Length: 340
Image (cartoon, rainbow, N blue to C red; front, side, top):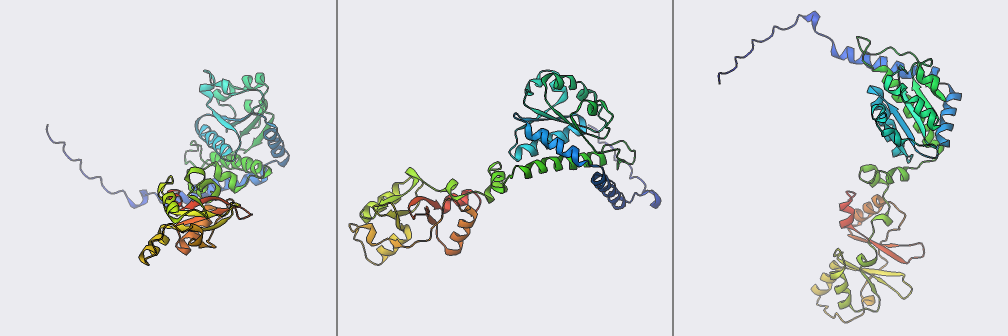
């Protein structure tokens, strides 16, 4: 194979031909920020309340639809709704015409996004929404469009000058529509008194979920809890420490009422052997460390983990308000949750 000859280097552009990228980027920011700012004067409070009323009254799921760039915003809007505990699904207009319309049922509500309000794929769905009797909220830049005329509520972003130098690529209009969709969802979220804990439960795999994880969700219980009675021998306690699922390296000791007396750890065992105390027949209640640091089921794992790090302990017995043992928080589980 003959080598491909290298292309000659291009001559450097004349200084006046070099675009000032930073200036242009700042101009884009300005145009898009202005489009969002203009919503402050344009947004009709009464219509916003009407849109929220439609979403509040929805007994099914909120179906969000749009095509093209607005379709990507619709997918995001549906995702944000779901992340705040609202049942939602994105409906692709083209797929809807080939069977996915079955995703929509009476009791649902629809949010449709289209800057022009005349996107063919979206407009073709309007008779089906009317036949199903589902209320329709339109986010559009044209209140006289087919979409707007078919909608129960219209939220209008108005005519928006695009940041694109050709005036063609949807940029500022999409920024405004995105902001309006966010405002709609967050107003709905505030009305529902959605909490950080509830948000975290819907994000168990991420940092958000870990930040609100409660001790009750991570503590060891039942067969994984190394529980011994105060009258059990030290030898029996060692067996429990060794054979309990997960090898916690500690035993928690309770009295007849199930109240926590203390915790006996591998470190305690090694220290007793080093001191020549090898009487394993004595009751564990006579040698267990009393008044241990504890955790509570409803406190955040992050807070308990910080206490474990500060005090250098690997286990925290978990007790209820009456001091009864309900579980054990182990450093192995804390580290596995990426909070340690």
